[in-house]
Amino acid sequence: MNSSTTVSAELGLRLVVPDRSSVPLLAGLEYAADDPYAIRMAFYVGDDEPVEWIFARELLTVGIVRRVGDGDVEVWPAGPEDDDTLNLALSSPFGDALFEVPLSALAEFLHRTYRAVPAGQESEFIDIDNELENLLWSS
Image (cartoon, rainbow, N blue to C red; front, top):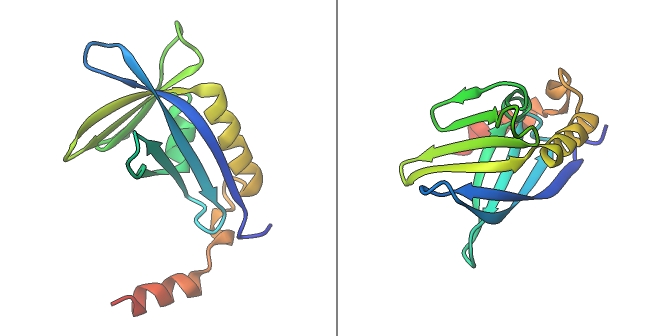
């Protein structure tokens, strides 16, 4: 498999606001085989630069079936009354946010990432020598 393989998608999310209504927004997802454990999600909010978060691919995958995460990121299925929504809660020093993510679109994206880099084979896509060189020479 080519380590320069990338998988990307755009998702229409909903930001849940305090009165329990929601605001639509767009998020871009990107997965790169040369960083096989991570998924980057860019939230587009207005005309500003997108706000980017990095998630463990496994965290998003497990969150489809049960509540997972601790601290800054939590993911869980919405429940039996809404079987096509995933909840994504983010916390930072700047505040907290709850997003409703379309489950089928996220699952399709994750499926494509596992076709690019199968589960359990992530370490085969990391250039350890290059990573060590970056760590040792970055200071």
